[in-house]
Length: 480
Image 1: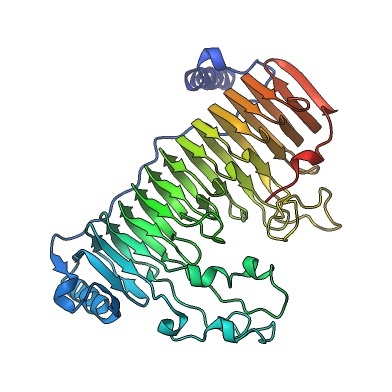
Image 2: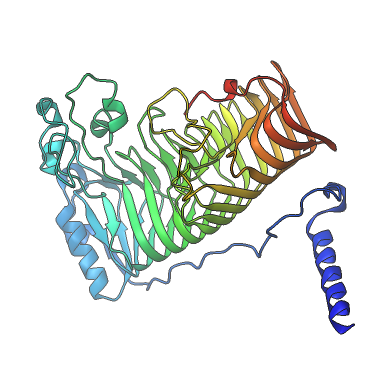
């Protein structure tokens, strides 16, 4: 009797908690599948603790004339900060050309207004051959080198794994001088007849394995590849401007990985992912972002280590290729769950919402959708996407509303859209997915059915639909 009473009490507590978490007006009907993961506490990240001592780069021989190489000045100044036990290294107004250098623990690299840290403008300044002279190079290369034997360049700014209490702050700019690398990028090189040299492109700012990192206020621009790639614990990225041409290859703005990551109040206008969350991330908050050119806010494609407890809210997308995207593939997949998007506005976004468990975007093909059926024996590292929730989403003037591409052997499931409006050319595809719920939803598609199903199970404004209907799924496949 006592055991039965305990079970009844536990059930009552669970039902009360569910009623508190979901407003009654938006609660799914009783027959809907209950969520597998409930919201947790607000996500916060601890800030770095840095001593108050101040050091000026000019006192270490730096010359901000845009011509002098200041690598030695940066190295001496950083060594002085480290010897003193930490502090703030002030970069005054001027253009400080430099080769790559490394930051240390308990350091704030502070760029004052008008300060620019700039990568070299020529391959010769890096001390590597001009790739224009290596067109006859063989296609293979030694480790750490591109085709043609071009050595790999270190990130302009980096740190050793295990660095703690690190900051990059101020209204200044870090410029990667990336244009000379872009034409030699691997994707760009596909446009040329072989043989063609491919130059390994450096990241602008790479900060692996950091504990308590803050990057605040700076402008990052023209990276040869990714602009800012931090990983670790307690990472705060805020008030950033990241800018590169829309056709600059692989110029991701922010590529963070780890736990307790907060990204807020950034404007991102680049040539690849605006934000690309890296494998294994959890407890991540992204809020108040403006995404212009770019490939949107992406989770994946590598998801073997999983993702969980990711919140994206109050973000605006204007002219991006993708909006909200979760992608993976057989062999590189894992569990992705407890992902929550809210208060999102999009216009002129090519693909506003995209779940793709068949991702094949690096194959150089017209479509980023790989084979739907698994190959024999392909049973390991399968994507498992569930408990993904979207609230208050408005999309106008887009080619499609969105798509969900699951796997026949493991459908995407428990995906909810609440208070959503789509005014698009085509509707929304649900393929190999179940327990997809649209509540208080409107899809105004100019062409074709608003909802296209291909082995899908959907409840749309209270009406259940399943099977295959609405037209061909293939019209939703093109594009990367």
